[in-house]
Amino acid sequence: MKAIECVADMEPKDPLKKRVELGKYIVADPKIAFGKPTFKGTRKTPDGVLACLQEGHTLDEAAQLWGVSQEAVIEALDLARTAVLEYYRVPAAEIDVSRFDEELQKAKVNKSKRVP
Image (cartoon, rainbow, N blue to C red; front, side, top):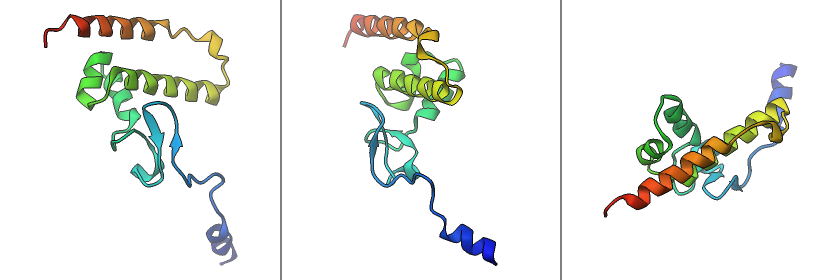
C-alpha cells in the first residue's frame, strides 16, 4: 500500500503546463494532442510527416498529403535531427543537412514554374 501511495503522490519530472513554441510551425500544447508536438493550428503531428518521408514520398508530396508547407516539413526534419543529436550527444557540425536545403530549393523552383 505504501508503494501505491508514493507513486500517487509523485508528479512528473517536467510536466508540460503551457504551450511551448518548438519552432515557427510546430508547437507543443497540453490542450492539444495530450501535449505532443503538432503543426500550429492543426492536430497533425510531425511524426506523421516523417513517416510519410520514410515511406519514400518527396518533401513536396509529404507537405501536400499532410496539408502543411514545405517549410513546416523541413522544420519537422530539423526538430527530429536535433532530438537525435541531443539523445546521442553528437555535435551538430558532424551532420550534413545540405541535401535538405537543396531539396527545398528544388521544390521552390518547381513550385514557381507551375501555372496557376
